[in-house]
Amino acid sequence: MPIKQLPIKKEIAYAAGMMGWSIMTNIIIVMLPYFYLPPNNSGLSPLVPQLLVFGAFNILSLIAASGRLFDAIYDPFIASLSDGSQNPKGRRIPIMKYAIVPAVIFCSLVFYPLVKGESVTNAWWLTFVLAGFFISVTTYIIPYNALLAELTHSADQKVRLSTYQQVGFVFGMILGALCNNYADFIQHFFHVTDRAQALQYTIWGLSIFSGLVMILPIVSIDEREYSAAKPTHIALLPAIKNTFRNSNFKYYLISDFTYYIALSIISSGLLFFVTVLLGLPDSDGGKFMGIMVILSLLFYPFINYGSKRFGKKPLVLVAFVLLSLIFVAIFFLGKLPFSSTMQMYILVICASFPLASLGILPNAILADIAQQDTLETGENHEGMFFAVKYLFVKLGQTMGIAIFAMLTVYGKDPGHDYGLRLNGVVGFVLCVLALLFFSRFKENKPTN
Image (cartoon, rainbow, N blue to C red):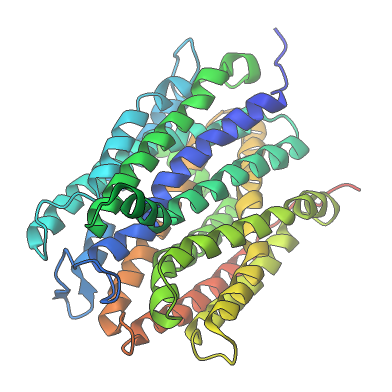
């Protein structure tokens, strides 16, 4: 039976899955440092001590890193399981459905410390629930992203579906970043006096909504109708080695890894940059995130056209250049000759193009790499390419949180903010490294 083209309503249902897990992962990235090590003008109390290990790493940075240790083993395992699945209902979706409920529960529990105060007990609890969340969401993300290469059958369709994915992702970013705005609403209308409790109610609500959205691809798409991929017969370790034999994939992976470290630094520091460096209310963080995302949507048609006309690589390189300049600006926030609000507007306007291009194009590029590898080897192990990518994405996100948390030791409060400004220096260096590595990526030129 011939393979069907995925209709637009199912492409949108597929993209909705990304919005679901994007909400939860962005809640973790944006709110974790702010909730557990808040600035002294936030109305929250610290929940883990600022103890230093080896003179540089604080507890929160080590917790963020340790939560990924289980993930490092689990990512390739779930990819291998998915690639080799012989389930008659498909290789990917039957696995995804088991991830949703645990992800919702663990995401919410991250923000329920056992002790209402500064305690090492909270650090141990946070390590456990973060590991549970990462493993749960990985069980969804790896098969989900592998579907991109299998549900699309042309370069244009890959870019289009990747664009829909990115729309889902950025709307997830907005909803996750608006936590404090929802908490304001809960406190005002439901008379909840405790700020931490209002945030906990908010995160439960967002997590449940995320789970419901993640169900949409599962109930909407029968992958047997739209994919001709067959189970791979390569064992786990050889499959991992095969991905690293692809030189293009290595350059892609390194640049993508450094980009996600930089992006995580911005996301983790957003509320601190707004409240400490600029002296604005924390609810403005979600507002500016929303403006940035909406502006990025305006670039989507250009990116789709430009990737056909000029290729994907030039657009990615321009995005890295702009992002490096944004990090320079972060170092000087609050000291520029504009009002605080104007400084944030300038920053989000400049960030909108990198957010759009680096959101849409990398997944489409990786789908091209995986498809070309399948043509050359005759083995369908797209899941392993996406597993390795998302292992490094999550390691990058975790390193970003860890670096941000570590630098708070050098100042995170009004009048003592040098640690926050150092994030601008680190981010600039990371973006330049990403630019250098991706410049060596070899792209097949688009045909005009």
